[in-house]
Image (cartoon, rainbow, N blue to C red; front, side):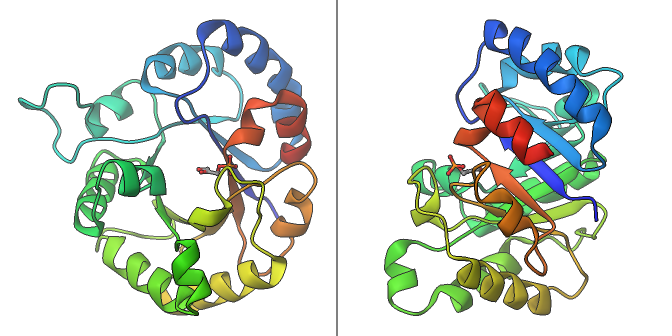
Length: 236
Ligand code: 13P
């Protein structure tokens, strides 16, 4: 079955990087049935949309504001992102929740704005190591998921990405059992079957095993998405 492969470049990349990265990806995009979504930093969205024209890849942003326009210096609206060809926006990444104090309510409003602009919201959720060690991971993540999903969410316009905080950028991937348990619980808790992604130290070595787990519809890839050879293997 086709899977969803999302590249989250975070605050990395450059025009020079894109010049080598995109052509290398083109043949893999032509030969895969997987849906590939590339999320670079804001300045690279527009040039990337031109570079990806004619390929099957979708363009995604890493954040957006809740309102379409207005006096919000430094912010970018979902409507603007749709205008330049974005099809998806990541909202509520743990780095935004932790470093920029984003709450479930704010993330829910951002996801609603993404839907209103006709795009897909990739809503991130995940527990800290302390919560995992206290045995409350599943309850915490389910609660976070329910509090972040807006009423406008459907299986077509939303993906939920489970990213345990302790697995992000640490090389510590959640075990296949931990991923299975969490995805089963999330699948049971969401009223409609929203596609579920896993993120957290996904590499070319573990992607196949993770993607073959029940209720894992795709992966959200950080560091390995910046390594062309690794990302090509994940797409394949
Ligand atoms: P890493 O793949 O670098 O662990 O990052 C995961 C992530 O945060 C993707 O959104």
